[in-house]
Length: 312
Ligand code: GLY
Image (cartoon, rainbow, N blue to C red):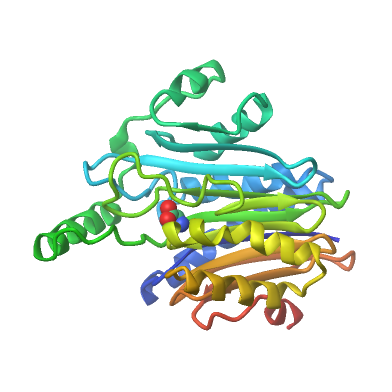
């Protein structure tokens, strides 16, 4: 059994964008699946999938990332190997085209788990990763979101930043039974500079452990942190809980923490789930139990799970 699931964020994707979001997720899932089908590692598969989404301007990661209050771009990302719980993450690092590559460099380096802020550029430079001009990451849509939020706040000052859908993530299980997760985001639109969301925090937006499975979350970052959503999800999988039921439970816990969002997961047996409490969630999956790849992609508006889609 090999499987990869990706998401393009929980939020409220306008109907005219559904096709582009679904297609982007499908391309990313195909990139991850190509790694798995060649016998590659789940860790490399989730990195490959997320890299595709970071370069796709439809999504809030890499190119297309949300803007801070100052009009700058600060990226969060994490990648985790279920074999040995190796994890690398970066938070609030400006001007990265491929945040997941810097997170992977942190994982491979192994000295630290999480590097934050502009000082992370010193580590990046040691690994051949160079900054890109901020303007190359800013899309018209991200600028419009910033403008709308700025105007909304002029009428209602002091409100917290709105969640920008479009965080991206991937989970996978490889032929050796190892799982991995990766997540990347620009965070919330109009966030304060220096704000860190759930994405790069192990156990919150990203978690993987071969004992249970792998999970990547999206949605209200502050609430996801309070729910330690992905750790809770994988712990439930480790106890043998059905992935659909586990997802339903952690999204209920997220609601208790005052948030909405979505989660994707794969368990150690190759069971997969996509579930959300947001209005929409873009996703794609490729699962191969030995009988050939089974594919699904779309923008869910129902909150229901992937299992049924893959069975059709
Ligand atoms: N879930 C992404 C964020 O809040 O930053």
